[in-house]
Length: 99
Image (tube, rainbow, N blue to C red; front, side, top):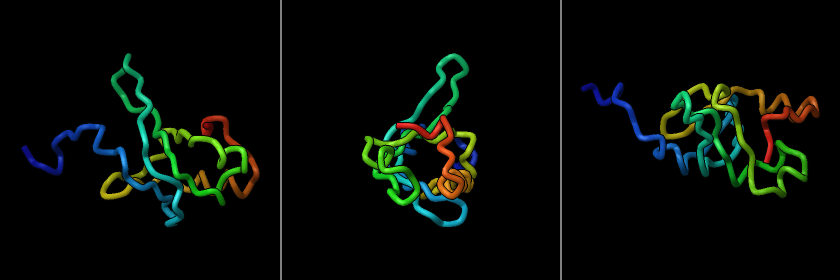
């Protein structure tokens, strides 16, 4: 089995830093949200989040959950699309980015 295509344990995501595709730090993966019915990761629970991207209430909370559909790439770090930055710029707190 090719090591590049071999399935990895989802726990390997825990502790990885998360950045937007523009290079802005978002936070660090603390846990995963799973849908056990379909055996799929549905979100990344982040802590140590970038306080500049989120409202003070969110920054003061324990963390956020980023929908897994926003993930663009996983390697030594996790890359998410820039929707997190756009939410901040527009002042539009999308419901799924929550503590």
